[in-house]
Image (cartoon, rainbow, N blue to C red; front, side):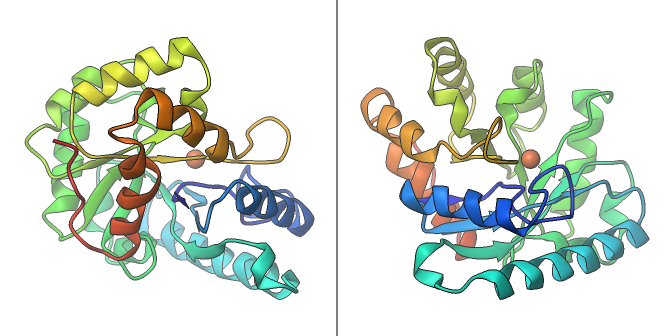
Length: 237
Ligand SMILES: [Fe+2]
């Protein structure tokens, strides 16, 4: 499995508090069958200097984490990315592409809560005409997901949903509604720690294999692989 949304880097955001927690999160993911984790710390990109700050912090954190790994076989491969908070002028930042998933032009975007779906669509359009491929983080978290997806329907976007949504019947019902609205999704953990916001990719995949069997491989494997390899994202139907 590929897990392309996580807060596994230490000391950067509200995710891992220290290197030990990072290692515990990564080991748990590996035990569940995750072969690659993208470390996607939050970037509140209010200006391009804030992007540079995040890039520097991210690199320092990554180096600390990597130097603590003794046996690579116990952990998933780690690539770098960011969960970038969408704002009005972000498409003008000259360094925005540095926040894409490593060696790709896919960029993970967190949507602002206070703006209309039409404003969001305009800002995402502005990013896409710069040659970046927007991935909308945890579309399942937005109560107005259907309006947002409707506004974005003419754009080339990918949606990420959180693995925890597969665990309860009510959330699976929500996923079914969301999956009707588009044809390109992948699942990630959005793990933050080892207690309350954990990786549950393995359990989610087990359930998806039964309840969403036609899509499960795409959601947990092929979609993420396409992003990491910077290929076109495959569609469900
Ligand atoms: Fe996140």
